Image (tube, one colour):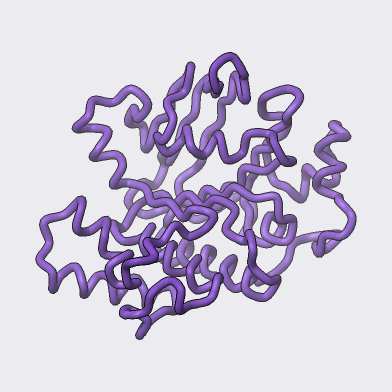
Length: 271
């Protein structure tokens, strides 16, 4: 598959999954990001990258509605999200799922209960119907048979998979992943990348990933936007392999050619 021509999701082919226009993110008087604009194609694996403190996680929180931008808008499949009515906002929340960095599983709940929570909150399905979907989603991420385990009883990589199963519970067209490889060994990280790619290829799901892991970026990213702390915005957008080799901005080349990272000098890692 070409890194610049991802397979679009069949239900939304020909549309942008996400459009961000003129976003400004601030905490009080401190501006973190300004004039941020970009679009994510349907079915893309799209990375938000950059050094520590550049605003990657801040941007994610604004994209998913945890924080309202000081300026600008976010649209999902052409529908206004930032200033949507309460009813429209709730409806749009069901079109995307989120895998948080820690997995964010409720420790007092089994995996069955964790994954079933969005179904309980947003649908009127019966308990039996919810449990059938939960079993399907856990199987989809390789956790069949773990329904009655608690988060403390499984590994870090399994927690990430369970969190991904919960993010997929409502069959969203978009999934956001915040530093999915954080705390994982290289093999487990690779397996998670393979799972992300598999979900995109089988379901057409758009994947938006916050990460600074070059192995993952070169392994599965179709496109990236790179944020910069000093300019408070985007300094590069495109195929990370092309940016690594041809960007005129030394900050971009330095970031994408860091020493000590396992990535091929040419091409990409093949999961």
